[in-house]
Length: 262
Length: 308
Image 1: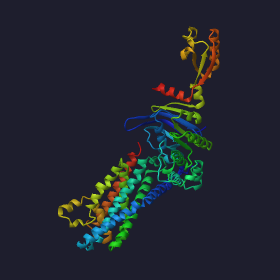
Image 2 (image 1 turned 90 degrees about the horizontal axis):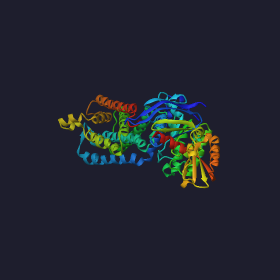
Image 3 (image 1 turned 45 degrees about the horizontal axis):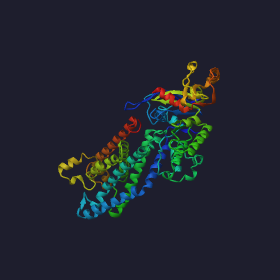
Image 4 (image 1 turned 120 degrees about the vertical axis):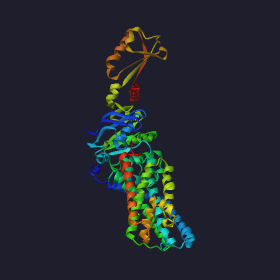
């Protein structure tokens, strides 16, 4: 018999166990996790970069094929962060294995850190792979590498937190797909992945400014090409605000035990 | 024997208004096997879930080895292992990986030697690298027990451990539970199989409609509530119970050929010889007799029925 957690203040063994479990799931589904998004992104480059991009010229002095790279990385980062985190926590709820996590000497913070950390790691890895893939098709220049990494980490964490909330909220797999497919993807496509919102007519441009994704993509693109639709400070503030909002949502979930504890 | 779990005035009312537990007071002694009996929906699983931290209590307090399950949850939960009723486990994992995961989850560093020992004890060593989905139902249940033992708990909850398993596996499970108890682990099991409680438990609690209606040692319970039934196979059938025997609570069965009487097991020496002498005085002969002691199942059914 053993009970060393009597005096345990921070259960890092549990964080590591959940993190490794989630990463093992990632390795088991490597084809779905890595290869599919890479093929999809490559197709975007073929269609938008080569076929259409050759007729587009430059945007803010950046070749169109290169211009869409940050947006495509963000597109994958959003969807993969949400999918990974939501599936990661929804699956134990669905199979019933969540009982073990809930009955373990683990705090809510540690649970979130492990699940969200794993989801963010996966999506960041994917983002970097897409960046490397894009480098095969178009010239890429990263003007602010520190900020690029900073945005990558912040966005992956924020959307993983959001995905975690979705995974707890969803009653089934249909609802699990609802947010990424019907909310996130349209907002991302309308958020300036393939264009600058300065190219839109006045009313549509104003309308686009209500789309939070615009700020995230704009900030990330600035870290590459030093060009942005909105000021980088505003982008950073909006991304941070979204991160804190998601953090608050997750805190509320654990405080109330929403769909976790009756 | 010191208490390892102390439950006081525990109550649980779900958001739907369902009162699952009411005013539960219960002490579990260190090193004992405690069986919690009750019909479906009586509150057995809710009680276990509250102690383990899966369900929030509405009222009262629970201490595990002196640690409050709410304010000192880390220390309390570290002492507990839970084997759920359903086969909840990750089917794509291997027994080795899932036991190692459980150990880490409970805050312990990796210990391959301990994991190996648990897997060998559960006869799962040869299957350690197989995917759980490929294992039989009995093996999956043993994997769950292994997961609960991976962090070397002092208290093990077994929620319906032998539900749906074959007789051989059930006996293996009982042997395992006894070995664990011999190693100092306190066992709390819920079961529908009265024979299981009768076979293994040191003490028995009966829960009905969220209330703990009885807690006794098994032997005291059998002694206190157990009844014996004496059946006399008469030489000549009787048409009716003679008026001289009306105070004895006798019944006539089998067309008047069998005379039956129930009596308290603890008082058998005082009542039965008197009855037999009285029958002899009345000239009622019998060619054979047999007695039957009531089982724990009879006691359980009578207790729960009384409450309805």
